[in-house]
Image 1 (cartoon, rainbow, N blue to C red):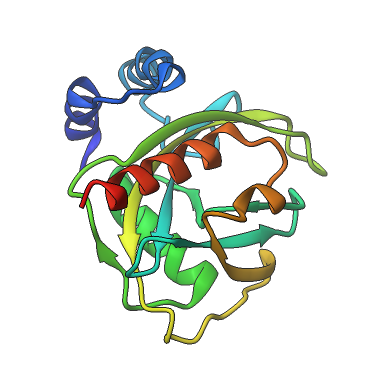
Image 2 (image 1 turned 45 degrees about the vertical axis):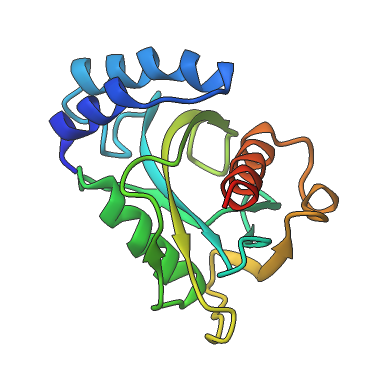
Length: 184
């Protein structure tokens, strides 16, 4: 999915969550006005991509405990110039979890979020414009923890609130997952 395709996907993106509707014009403004929006060099904010990875039953999600941020989050990271956010999400998920059995469950955007990343060492605070994709993976596959994380763990959607501080985007993705699996 290149920049123009991403803009098209955002134009067609439908959500029941008001906060996501507010993100869409901000994403499109970034994509239309900043040629370097897929690069970390855009210090005010840039495109990132992540993976919401669920088990086959849809009742657990694989989260990483991010070393720098000290929070449980979905695997993801910087585009570093790659406009294909779906590929970025897969690359980051494999790097951060070691999983190779990822299967895309929804051919398109699963969720979007814009969140502030705090100042860290020599990196000023900035926004991540995150495009999220929904994947399924086997719990039988061995998980690998890389140097960006303290831990990687399957967490039940029923107990996820114990792991996350008030994090509306993770709560939102949990609700979307429950909705998908309760409607089947």
